[in-house]
Amino acid sequence: MVEMAVTILLLGILFAIGIPTFRSVSQTYALKSATENMAARIRLYRDRAITTGRIQHFHFGAAPTYGWDYLVYYSHSGDSITGAWRLPPGITFSGGTMSWTDMTPNGRSLVSGLLVLRDPRGNRDTVSVQLSGLVLTK
Image (tube, rainbow, N blue to C red; front, top):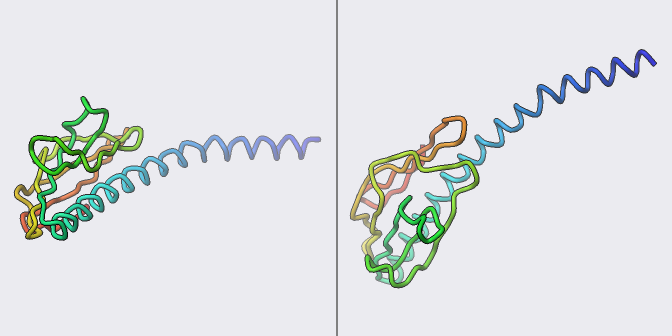
């Protein structure tokens, strides 16, 4: 009986320590995943601009009126949305140096800058878009 009580106590202590650690790791992976997904989508639409010969216009953090965190459409008029996404729960835009960019048919970006994403614990991750069209994460 005593051994069983000690075993249950030890398991309780392990769960008490393990659950917050698991949540912390889970949030870190959500931030990394959101950053990688955003960079991959920018790269995909850069490729689409090259293959279709049409500018792909991105808006970041400026689309809550549409119910999306970032979106892409063919022109500045916003007449034809071709993709729209939400960030994972708890992940938000935390500034940066750009709110939009155009990926052009020659593979270049009209605007270079950083997009900064943040998780609830304050960890930050960035997506960098360069004028050459290169998209990096950090």
